[in-house]
Image 1 (tube, rainbow, N blue to C red):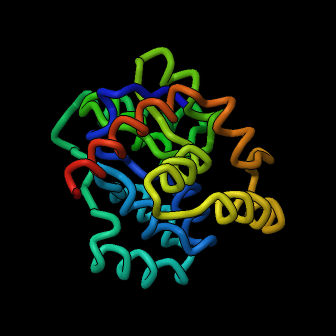
Image 2: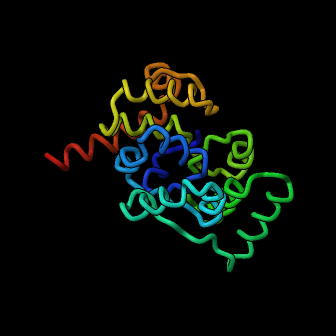
Length: 195
């Protein structure tokens, strides 16, 4: 996770793995509601995800509900297209390639847990990214999930053979103080506005 207070309001380009994780848990709507930005699914990510026909109606449902928003990867921007094809030629998945290329040139945040594919590039180009656990943590801090749901969600993902670190909420919070502090300020200001 690279993330700072300037990233709070940036749209999050959701990759297939994070989408699958949050959908599997039934938490995608709650996580989306806890964000001060939008989940964006690029057309390339949607195409990769909907190779499995069971996800076609699922993606449509989330779009109709305003949980995620679809966006075409800009083929008019030569920088994005060139970067995307450079990744593909290096055997990086289509979804990750699209997210990294668009995020670099459009200043978005990436929602992906494929750290082996994205972290080096993101650090090199100072692109912020959030993993599934980061997003679950934000949802707990925003009051949309509880600590038990975080802990149970992690265990359910592991039991479902999803590659995810085995953290309990308290350990995760202790090891990620920056994310906690950034969102704590946001959530406190929202509570004051609601009062």
